[in-house]
Length: 386
Ligand code: AFD
Ligand code: MN
Image (cartoon, rainbow, N blue to C red; front, side):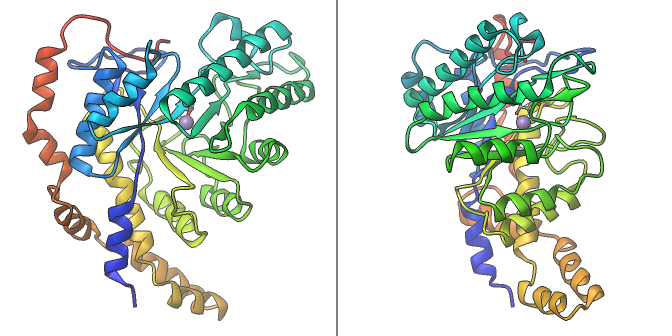
């Protein structure tokens, strides 16, 4: 029998980190559609993130992206966050937008470019020291577009060398989170293309190097929950970048394209003992055509709903059916949890926390959207900087 009180307590304690860049303008290589009220500064991004946390009660940390969120005084930014009930979270590096990085960054054939990229990564660790962030997230766009362009094995050697220097710089309570992506912007090879490559590098680096699973970074049809179960079993699942996709790295709202897949992922997280602060739940998505703050709130809710369903799986009945080879019962037990409408349960959790049962409706009633559209006029709206 499922302990509903324990499920509610687990849901009340769940934390989902929002991305600073999710509040800014974004788009595709065809067009970035600007939206009214978009933040101009990291400070305004934190004001918006504070609204997500105010109405969900589950998003107290905000990931930063350097240099998009570069400020003169990171301690002051951390204090500003704290005054709003927030904490600065993961620091994301950016070695994919400087002209020097056309042929790669840490994997570039020119040692001078590799040094420049390494200096940026080390600057990100300096920022972690200033903000109190524990996690450095590294995603490399590095790769090649044509067979023969570069030596793929030498690029792995360069990558390993750069990662080792960053890992050596980390403090004892800081982690290196290495994110993989199977293609884009490189089209022939990507230097960190899959979980196996990321895992192999993290294994060599040490205990504080772990893998980031971005749910949009796999070829269509990939069984992501199998990767999650395997990385958890190896103690190398560091974090998620949640978003959803229909075809590529679409960066749509988490859970919007395939809620069943998100449920299966959350089941493996919980079954594998990964529902702890050691596995960071982050959103990494962009809201090209939809209003950003309610889209992020919806994403937080979608992750919560998938988690609630996964927590409701009758584990004893499932294990018994699995071990007895009772295929249909085992599948039915899992589907029974997935088919449960958990919105009333989550509504109770929120009300017991003193929150509105419907965070999106509460946000719309707050008038925040009209306020920022009126006040945030002029200046340079934040965006991808592409
Ligand atoms: C891009 C990359 C990757 C990374 C994010 C933040 O595809 O997901 O985590 O930018 O740098 O979306
Ligand atoms: Mn990502």
